[in-house]
Amino acid sequence: MQSYERHAKVLELLAVERRVFTNQLARMFDVSRETVRRDLLEMEQEGVLVRVHGGATAVEREIAPEPAFSERLVAHAGKKAAIGALAATLIPRGSTVFIDAGTTTCAFARALARVGDFRIITNSIEIARLTGPAQTCDTLLLGGRPHADVPATYGEMTLSEIDRFLADYAVISPVGLHADRGATDYALHEAEVARAMMRRSRDCIMLCHSEKIGTESRVSICRLDEIGHLVTDEAAERSLRLPRGEIHYASVRPGA
Image (tube, rainbow, N blue to C red):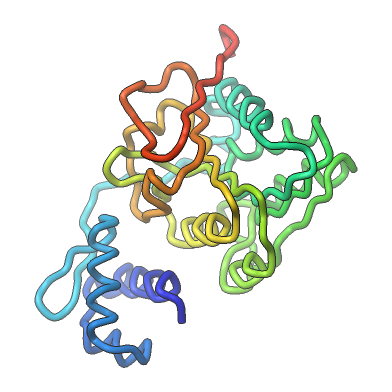
């Protein structure tokens, strides 16, 4: 079992039991206690748990859940369209692109389909619906378990299918992007898919409208130094820096 798989299981346990124990995890994963301690240290550095004597506890944060997907589709639509259009210009034609499920990535997928000549691999049913019939892109919908709240597939089957591919880019739309905590998602299953796509890609492009910059959610996706490009809108706070990447600011039409 890889470390990221152990991390995901630890978060699942913490979501239910609020505390985990080193000995318990060592037996469960069939690894040494030292390996578990390293896992917990890495996860504490990501801000997703707090180490205590003998194990770890869940981080207690008052973080509101995301609005419904249908509400997010219409919120900040002008900014998302501008971000999607700008992001599409960063990707050479003929590239293979992982795209995770989100409303900003939907706007990006529309822009990509207008250009054409891309291979799109996505867990988003909405993105597959948008790009599949267009015949300008080769679209693959990852298998897995459909989620009740978001039109997308998740779970072990989705993660295993991601591991079958190598992509040029992973295009990810997190819930928040914070200078200290990096990119975060509200739900564990969303963060797992985003991390898996990044792991199997040469470069990562994050799509965040300005209201997401400086915010954080519950589950870590990645650090800032793992992001190759951030595409946001011109209203975003300019103090954020990517240690190894570049930030692009999209111009939004007045009234959009």
